Image (cartoon, rainbow, N blue to C red; front, side, top):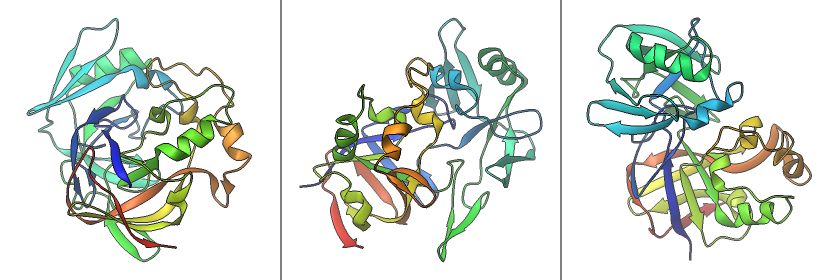
Length: 265
């Protein structure tokens, strides 16, 4: 039987993730997932691909904004931005976002080691409209799709081939499913979890962020897990792990929920 093993959000894109016991899924993604973004002075997004230290900045969502923490720095309270909108860029998409306070920009710039600012997507219904294979959808600041689905079985299979096993956190999923066979997710088209329905539309191409230890921000091995993945998961478009999904029916998912495969390819 398939079930939800764990649920995860990343309130600020590319900062440390949070495991949650339940997660509401809206059309643009999980509640509080990647609604905040760090940008350079030109408004271009910044991620662990260039600045792995970002993994060490821990985030707590509060009723009024965020709470940021990092070893060696005083913790920072970040209020929900109330300013005007300005354009920022994420993967070629121009998005109107609200700029955060100057104190937040200073704090983040000191931790990351270069000038940057924090911005917020306050209108996820319309801020970033996208289209894929005749599917029109809204998206938060996640790379390309609202939800990323991974399975414990596929990670176990990969770890059996790696010189050193890695945790699921390297792949930054939203939804981790237990009880499948390795790579079963390649064949899933539609899932039902309680009242939620997901459409799995595209395998996820992996990048150098998978080499970053999400606890320390250190890269233990610049080649793994991508080198090993490439030996058996290289497809058109990249080296794949996990499946990108759209939210066909909204609702709330809880750890332990049963997962039903409605359609396969």
